[in-house]
Amino acid sequence: YVVAGTLLNNYAHIFDLLTRLRQAVDHPYLVAFSKTAESREGCKNQQNGAMESQCGICHELAEDVVVTSCDHVFCKTCLMEYSATLGNVSCPSCSTPLTVDLTTENSRRKVPANLKGGKRSGILARLQSLADFKTSTKIDALREEIRNMIEHDGSAKGIVFSQFTSFLDLIEFSLQRSGIKCVQLNGKMNMVEKGRAIDTFINDPDCRIFLMSLKAGGVALNLTVASHVFLMDPWWNPAVESQAQDRIHRIGQFKPIRSTRFVIKDTVEERILQLQEKKQLVFDGTVGDSPEAMSKLTEADLKFLFQN
Image (tube, rainbow, N blue to C red):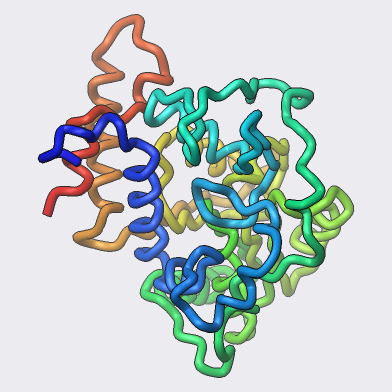
């Protein structure tokens, strides 16, 4: 795209490539066994029929669903991030100008019946054999940090944040297989399910870990029962990560807070963090700039992210 001079015309595809790179760093399964990995024989049967409200940006089952006027489905948070990061107001799937107002609840169109489908299968159902489940570097590191947390404080609890619910599913399976009880909260759950998960985490002393999607955000949760935060992947806008950590920095928190960020060396994640730092320095030194400007990616930024 750079050589051809078409970089600015292919933002959506570039953003998709960046998403895939970020997913591969979390766990290769997120790419190899995604719902769009049609080359995998084990996934072909899952591709029949409707796409089951799959987000056109993160390729996960859409959370807090937004349907555009061109009938493409996205997570509300993904679409907001896409628009803010690239400064783009066209549909990531077909480039049709977006007419959705993401600031109000009533603006979200109803999901078409042909996209709803029946009971949805997660990434674990798409794996060929759970007996052959392979962990990842990040999951191994997380498990070690959790063990250290429990050894240091027998009553300690922690919250694990990721923007990919499929990754949370893989983490949950791995932790439970290791004897670590956990619950998950994501944007696909209804209010009853969310309430049950929160109650279990707060009141069950054996439940040490709360797996939470950053996209489930928005809800004003007071989780001061937790004193550890584990951030599994960097977000384009560091303010989102800060909001996640603020959930345990509330009145009633009596324990020291520890936050751990997992970053794989020599990957796109390091470049994302470097880009965050650079933009933060520019933002801090600019009078009258807007917070939205910090999250936008320029052509130079995109070149930097893909450099060898």
